[in-house]
Amino acid sequence: MTDKADKGPRGIARGLTNYGDPAFAKYLRRSFAKSMGYSDAMLDRPVVGIAYTHSGFNNCHRHFPELLLAVKRGVLAGGALPLEFPTISLGEVFLSPTSLKFRNLMALDTEEMIRAQPMDSVVLMGGCDKTVPAQLMAAASANIPSISLVGGPMSTSRHRGERLGACTDCRRFWGRYRANDISEEEINLVEGRLSTTTGSCAVMGTASTMACLTEALGMALPHSAAIPAVHADRLRCAEESGFRAAQLIGTDLTPSKIITEKSIENAIRVLMAISGSTNAVIHLTAVARRAGIKIDLKKFNELSDTTPVLVNLKPVGSHYMEDLFAAGGLDAVMREIKPLLHLDAMTVTGETLGEWLAKPPADPVDRTVVKSREDPIEPEGGLVALFGSLAPGGAILKRSAADSRLFEHTGRAVVFNSLEDLSSRIDADDLDVKADDILVLQNAGPASDSAMPEAGYLPIPKKLARAGIKDMIRISDARMSGTAYGAVILHVTPDAATGGPLGLVETGDRIRLSVKDKSIDLLVDEATLAKRRAALPKPPVTARRGYDRLYHSHILQADEGCDFDFC
Ligand code: FES
Image (cartoon, rainbow, N blue to C red; front, side):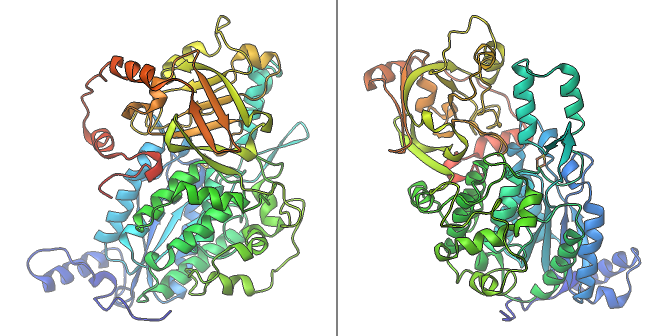
């Protein structure tokens, strides 16, 4: 694709500051740019902006200074001038109440800085969890030639002969500690061994899922998603991404040509085949929405039902991202599901997906990690959308990560009306709860004060955990970490805080789950629900300011990707 779509001024002459005298603005800008030591030859080049998200609050991006040098090398080799600019960085575990609340802020920041500053194309350096979707949302809206570069996954570590990787093993060991299976001394030792290199979480959590979906969308280079953060190939990929960004300048290969209905469907297929994170449903919906595409959850189920799970990675399987890299990477997965993909979808390389996949693979595929279509891990996709009287707008279950004995189940609800209620009662010895009950958490959705935290993975009550119970049905309007597992029904829409039926459930009510029918129903008659609705206390008026006010005034529900209504 070589059309010269962008015919305006290039490089730092773009988008001049408005002083009412464009010639003066250009002269002043060049003068100030020269204060950074740039020569005329450099300032005459077109500019590749680099959205740079290194932060002392983001362990996953610890290696970004070195990666940035490689990107710049590539940009210079491509004949452009690389100029990095800082944006908000979202370090998953450092943010309160939850990183999702700030994804849209990062998307706004990134989009506006792409628009406001003089750049002809942009490299988006992300990695940790919400950073990649925020950058994709921004790129879709700003719509200048863009290429994503993820930081790559962490490498694994060892504990007493066992491999450890953040963060499925974090949860596994914490579960063992809660069940008194390991000592405080051991959990402290494990704390120092779970996350020992830079990079995003080492399993198929949200960050790895979004890295894979970015490659599947065609917004990143082929074979790039699974390269470990510390591998030399990651630096080569950074260099190549910078080079490609320079080549993209002046073409019409903008995100709107790449993020299309077809590439979104490809990404959903890949999401199913890798058994990716439930969070990716929200993020992909938001990215698609920015490109004017609505993801219909019924269509989502059709794609899920016809896409096998092929990747044997934690939290569903037993391997880690570095194993996927060694096994052939996402490329190996896409080759397996090639007949299910739209091969005419365009990619950032300027080739279609079909043209990528027509090239012979570099190495044979390790079938212990990436299964063939003939011998899948599961014949159908890892995620399923559920609908019914409890979730008229849908809910999500990661069926591949749940105990299938719970798939057709009617049980008694045990309700917690807030996160505070959950934490104060879940481990109480006198909590009236049995293994076949259904735990319900209310008021943890996008419109709640907690802004949809990853609290949907309700802990098994201590007294049941000690009795050996490993899984129970848990329902909420919250999210779950992509590294978690269990019969956990999430993103119930509409959420309790906007008056959804979830907020009307009371302890003792019966709830029916049928994965076969893709349904989730509250077995309470409408007259009773109407009475409960009328008796609901009015939500307290909360005085809000700043971003919190913007968030609560404009946040949409999970079925619209939890984006802002004005984006
Ligand atoms: Fe950054 Fe998990 S904490 S990806």
